[in-house]
Amino acid sequence: MIAFETALQKVLDHSQDHGTEMVGLAEALGRVLAETIVADRDFPPFDRATKDGIAIKFNSNIDSNTSFEIMGIAQAGSPQLSLENESACIEVMTGAMVPKNADTVVMYEHTVKKNELFYISKPIKKGQNIHYKSSDTALGDALLKIGTTVTAAEIGVLATVGKSKVLVKKLPSVAVIATGNELVDIDKEPLPHQIRKSNTYTLKALLQKESITAEMYHLKDEPAVLKTRLGELLERYDVLLLSGGVSKGKFDFLPTTFDDLGVQKVFHRVLQRPGKPFWFGKHEALKTMIFSFPGNPVSTYANYHIYFKSWLNKILGVAAPQITVFLKEAFENKTDLVLFLGVKINLENGKIEATRISTTGSGDLLGLSKASGFVKVNPGEILEAGSLVSFIPTKRMV
Ligand code: AMP
Ligand code: MG
Image (cartoon, rainbow, N blue to C red; front, side, top):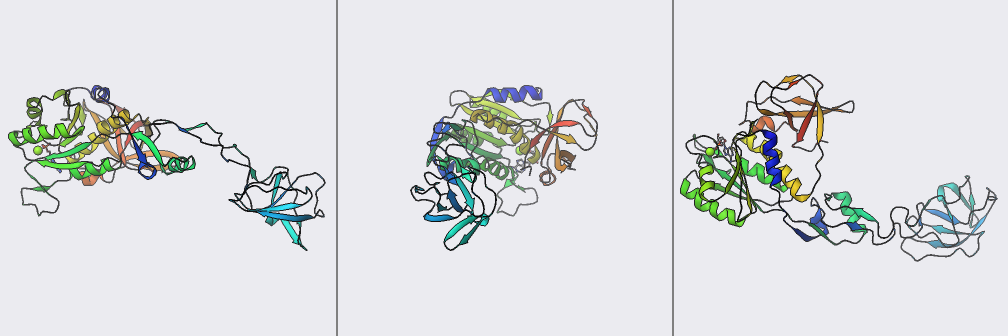
């Protein structure tokens, strides 16, 4: 049995690089950039009108009696026009190039049109309503760093600089494996001594959020079957995520099976709750990582976030924020284990407050579905109401 911090550190020490791959822009959503994105031109690429109106050459004598003859119309998407007569104007549309010799745009709402002449009805400032060339970014500027997770906003930036294909970090291939003779498929009617498997579906869904398409397996608690099937899966995948079969029961065969298959155990059992019987190892020759979680649904769920998600962030080079929240009610950890308490969070007067949710224990995934995450409480720690505690989100916070 090892301390929680040691266990987490050992998991992170086993990070490995899975390389990079090119994907189409739409597929880049949720992925992590493996190249710096550089501006391929100035942005805006030209002095751009930001209002529909008229473009003029500014001078301080302009007042409401000054008339402007109309010399043309500049449309967005048309080449630049030129204001040949500086006491005239050109009508400009939002997104159009400001005409040559013009330096100020007056929106239609601040003009009056009489007898095909424009008059300006409000005081103006030189340079108004122009988004100047390269005022956002200049050609060659670094816009997005390696390690950035691509959200819809980054998709927009990538599109702006013409990246129809983008280099991203490759994701590991993952098998999600349920163990247990009591488990049946979700489309079956379980007999009285059976339950439907849920962990594989939960894990697959969690991985889907990371853009990983995991394949699901179910293995019976039979040493020969486990050895053959796990031997095959070790060769086929970068990561095996297992649930069940690592506790002290008579049919918990996984630790000995891993041993038989030449998997190097890094640790087994951590001073934590839930998730204490966690087994972690690596097949050195095949470079396969094995995260073998206890089968209780809450244990599997917590350990996925605590260990696998941290490991994934590390291998992808994603800097995950360290989140702290205020504990609503006092809590005392009278055990020698690190406790992960399921909590609901509320935003109160700009403060994120965590309230414990009541569950009946490690089997209570239904109770946990109400939680927004876990707070971590160290062994022996006495927390007052309002204490700051470290928080592991399991759901989107807002
Ligand atoms: P184990 O870690 O194999 O001793 O399993 C602990 C508990 O979790 C038992 O009650 C199992 O029936 C349950 N369990 C194991 N695997 C799953 C699964 N895939 N889905 C739902 N419950 C499971
Ligand atoms: Mg079992």
